[in-house]
Image (cartoon, rainbow over all chains, first blue to last red; front, top):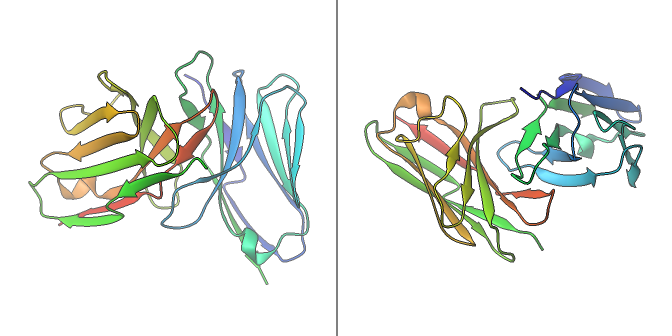
Length: 112
Length: 114
């Protein structure tokens, strides 16, 4: 069974602080996606990382895929209240089924 | 691009009745769609994989006779919750696969069974 351990599961910080969310697995993924979800809405795709060691930036968000493609991290610089939400990592399993393995999610609250 | 819609966005039904939820890819063709269930403040749990023109593949523990999935076209998949009970109340989300890796999610359907 492939698992994706996401941590921390809850994070409450002040506006302007930095934070990092981690996703780790013992399995290798062909790609990994990061999503952000607001209450009562579906997840919105933030980024897809495919290559081991890949780093992608989206404004104040930096995403990294581990060299072995088993782990990933999301770093937010100078968090803002608008960053509040549920962040989900999801790994694509080998083969062409398209199935995603989701982490447990990180609920982020940024206080003004 | 890559917009997925769901209908209805919320539904309340009585115990014992059936409810159908539609998932549509609006601007692309999706050979594969996925159905998820999500409990409050938790991650998504995959229920089944739906391929156009073939039977859905259900995850372990998901009752295929209770959660009927039909993927009649490249832009539409439906989930029917049959003989719904209060424990079926949840947030149901579909996603559609466009390229090799990426899935795009619908806005979700809140089901409440009374």
